[in-house]
Image (cartoon, rainbow over all chains, first blue to last red; front, top):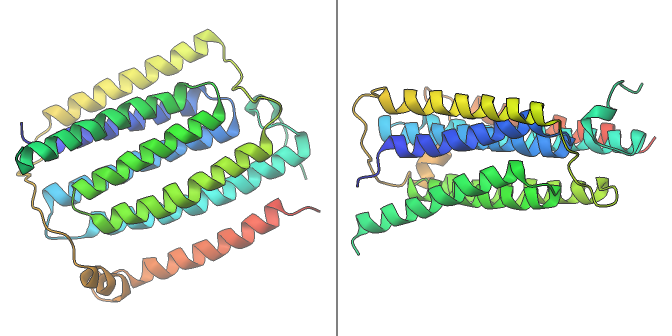
Length: 103
Length: 170
């Protein structure tokens, strides 16, 4: 058995669709955010694998992964700030209780 | 055990860990456990980066994701936990619809991945030198990334300010 590129891609596909399943079915804002994190992470794996196997002398996928990690850190920070603010206002972070925006 | 066999064994372990823990992340009922399983998935992903010989990327993954983001998650989970937060149950039909969507999408994507020919692909080893990464991050010529680097720094600043503005007490 040799390690083909497709093995990595199948693994990241499993991770991606686990994230999509969680995004659809979860009803807690933080759980939804965790699912989004899974999706982003699987895409990062794809970038690194494509770079290593298809274009080994270039570095585009590498840097795209690097910047994607940075952007996802930003996104998480702001989303958690919003979630904590929601929790202060309605004492709950279940999606079904969010019917109106405050202010 | 030869190096190739070792690589395959490590890959099998990492792949199994990613598959099992990412499914557990979205199916477990307790949100804190979900965050812990996410941490394991991120560790395994860092292992995959190390195996692809992108050690810098693996280190970034470990420090930013495992060190920073998971801590943020755990703190916010503990802050927003109402007595024994269990993820509220969904109607069975909706759960089933989500499951069907995910399984169908995964089947289609795996099928396309396995049948599509990507052209000549081979594993070419070799770490990227840190000096090369540094000059590529700091240069302004073609295939160099100073502009996105600066934009990311502005984005981080914006996120700090935005986070403070949103989360502060009024």
